[in-house]
Image (cartoon, rainbow, N blue to C red; front, side, top):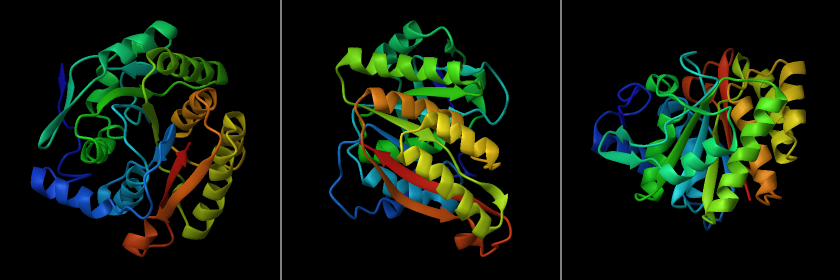
Length: 267
């Protein structure tokens, strides 16, 4: 199948040359890119979070396959939906799905199923693609959209992804697509998000789930991040680096209701 863009022209430019220019301007390389195992990258409109996403992808070597785990904002589809073949069509390019790796993940858990409905209108995975393509035009993806909960659910999917990557023998990057605190003051958002970022940096998925619940941290991709942490630990990641953190208030100058954006690399 060919999945068509859902948010081109709203979250990012629909014009291919304008989109490439946006991504190029956001892709500021401050240090030599490292080989990473996983990352957290935001998924808001590019004017708000594009600079953070750009720094994430500029800081790492984007390999031949990227598994993107995003939250299901729409409520359509299954608890964990994957598209296991075909392409994601984007302005100016198509991204092929890694069929072998997608099939291996599904073989490792019965919680992930083929489901295009969960992806049809979802933006959280789509907005990552221009950055991935810019840094590796030949990269393939495995798109997974989740709205299930519970630690058994998270653990099963995280284990399935790690096993599939290990069995493949390939270099694969796992990206958890997530924004952070939503619609609180800039000061409160930064304090809350710091607690969540600390749990990610400590490779503590139960702690991340606990602190977001107890402190009411509205991190939309907390489940993808927890899944990513389980996989990353099994794949040997031992270090985490906060690449950048910003809030929408830095763009809108409205500090009363902001959204937080964190870029984190695990290696």
